[in-house]
Amino acid sequence: MTGFRFEAAAMLPDDWREGSFLGRIQTAEGPSPVLVQGGVVHDMAAVFPTVSELVAHRAFDAGAGRALGDLATLGLSAAPDAPLRLLSPIDLQVVKAAGVTFALSAIERVIEEAARGDADLAAEVRGRLEAKVGTGIRSVVPGSAEAAALKEALIADGMWSQYLEVAIGPDAEIFTKTPVLASVGWGAEIGVRSDSTWNNPEPEVAILADAHGDAVGATLGNDVNLRDFEGRSALLLSKAKDNNASCAIGPFVRLFDDRFGMDDVRDAVVELTIDGPEGYKLHGTSSMRQISRDPEDLLAQAMSEHHYPDGFVFLLGTLFAPTQDRDVPNRGFTHKVGDVVTISTPRIGTLVNRVNTAGAAPAWNFGIADLMRNLVDRGLVTATARKGEAA
Picture 1 (cartoon, rainbow, N blue to C red):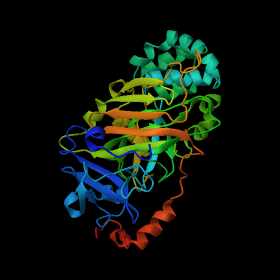
Picture 2 (picture 1 turned 45 degrees about the vertical axis):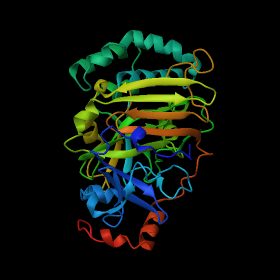
Picture 3 (picture 1 turned 90 degrees about the horizontal axis):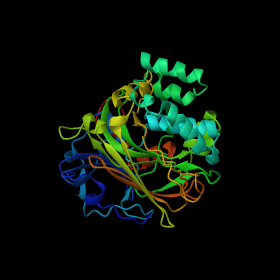
Picture 4 (picture 1 turned 180 degrees about the vertical axis):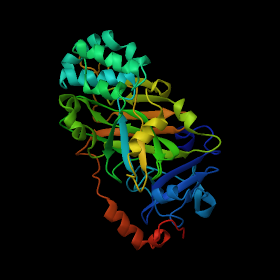
């Protein structure tokens, strides 16, 4: 996977030459934000050296940058030694995520909790819970009077769960997925803890927002999850979610314009394919039309109160919950090292990553201090010496 070459025609929407795309690449000098417009890649580091500043100033005029060449022939790769390596398209933004925003994902989280992370018990719990709430939970509006009535009925039957609270209650589950600069991009290895025996990808649409919570574009994300850890206790969410290489984002952020907007996000159907090294294949879809909360509502809940001066990326959640058996009947799905995970939707693009253990995946060793030193060495910090002023 790390030697894969990025093919624009296969990884971006059909109209990619008409759209505007924001991303980051690793050059010989260091990481640079780029804009792709008219099919041409432009290095924007001399305009603003970070993606967060480009977004803050809406500096989306690619002509102000330095043209590197046509994306189709530029030779972007995921190889560590590639002259131009495609990175996660964000830098100083916090990565936030929402959980159980779809009815099916709520049911699966209740199963994890009830089974205490034991996949052997999952099938029995799944059947009992779906028989009870499988249809009702799909039609209820979170926080409504109907949701409150359903909650009371489930409590009376001993079927209530903290996961149903965030699925149909007034407050969404929102958490920090991974630290600043820790997400990986297209073609990189994604990491699963080596001591996890029940885990899965979570294919999601992600929204890029500025410091005010205003959305500027959308991309794709993989919110890798350890079902055995989170199933044992919700207090293990951090261990289940935040591990080396456990968050992939990319390949680019498609910027909102007159050709692409939030309604396209609402209409998105996200497809997931997993190709296992032993020949196993799994395919699933997640329709954003079935999300319980509107993306704008989720953004508002994620924003909190003046909390992200460099903006944030927000993973909206997924409908997909893999239950197809892989090796043992009734044990469901879990990753194997070497799985190739492909997440795609026609209006945004395709994100591809290969699974490894978090310990064996390339270590995250380029942090905020490293980025600041690199920008100083390249003479780029003057571009943002005064907040609110362009170079």
